[in-house]
Length: 364
Image 1 (cartoon, one colour):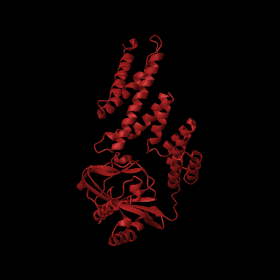
Image 2: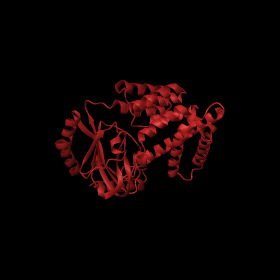
Image 3: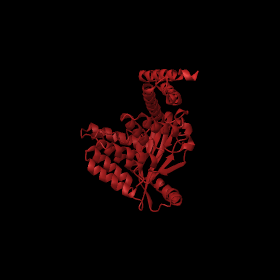
Image 4: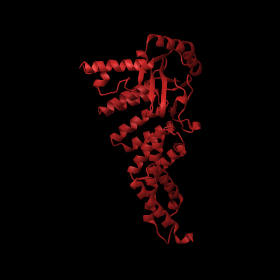
């Protein structure tokens, strides 16, 4: 039914374009339509499909949600069926504009390679995407940062339902979306008030704290921005975006040791999970960035120590203690970008400084 709906919508959109009326609203705004994305919205499905889905919701899914989460008066406010034919691309990490997200597999894992649902914070799953059998249900809080991951072969179909509840207003998500629109219009004072209104209802929402950090940075309020990023990182350690942003800000302020501590924490949390077979590609990119940043900061610290060094007074203890790990990180990063001349130059300089520190006469 989803396939037929997508094809029917594509045909209708082509007819609309050929008639010269400019196409759908999405097409006029330069956005890809649902059918172009391989999606069938529930509202476009045949009535018999909606009848089956409503029975499933009333008889099975709503009772499960009420029992598991204590949430009453729940309802699906939106939903779609997504079809992906390899090769596809991963979604960016995001949260949904609902209370709960239901993900129902319509394809068997044998029908495609790779793919699944990546959820930040599932450390006991080795950071790999979750894969469920056909007909199984994956339910998670919509506020949890997650992403659908790409498939490399085959075909994958999934139904996604977005659930809200009468007694659970999604204030944090709504104020964040409104605040971003205000930032885009350069209305920073209004955006700040909007984010703060969201925090009054959801004080631990890390994304709202990051939004306030962004505004502070745009205003040149560096300490306020750093405080907000640190707060966001503490509130939601599963996400590394705040820590990475804070590290890069510290590096730009010529504080490489403080920056290195942020990058060290990120890499400690990732724990080489990006190197596992099947690891999520954005996780690989994040870890690569963290290794390069950490290697560069360590090199800056070693250069500083070399400039202060006096043969007769002290050894280069910091260099000998920390640079070997930086070298390992740069070598690992080079595996993904073997032709990167900048990284090669950093690695050569780091190896030179380490060899020079190890040649201190007192070591013999």
